[in-house]
Image 1 (cartoon, rainbow, N blue to C red):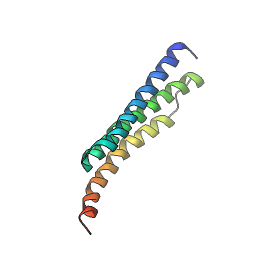
Image 2: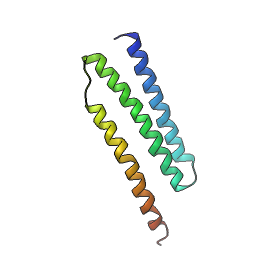
Image 3: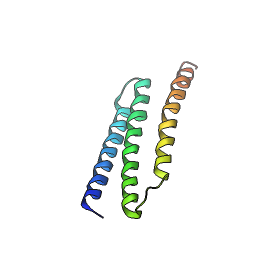
Length: 99
């Protein structure tokens, strides 16, 4: 494996890990429910995108051709994370005031 590929993979993994860490801290530290939903939805999606991009570069360097698996995982995450956050934002206040 070449030095350029190892450097690219390392930078993508570190960048993805930083975004995931920031999203996790945002989930713990922020006060409002809607802001708490925003932090992990955006930051974790970007973090997993970085990790999956690093995986794509690694597999391309290892096998010599690109695989579609990482792209499909990324598309699935980009589509489902905002939809899940939107549904949770609509449902949680209903359960909060009953009781």
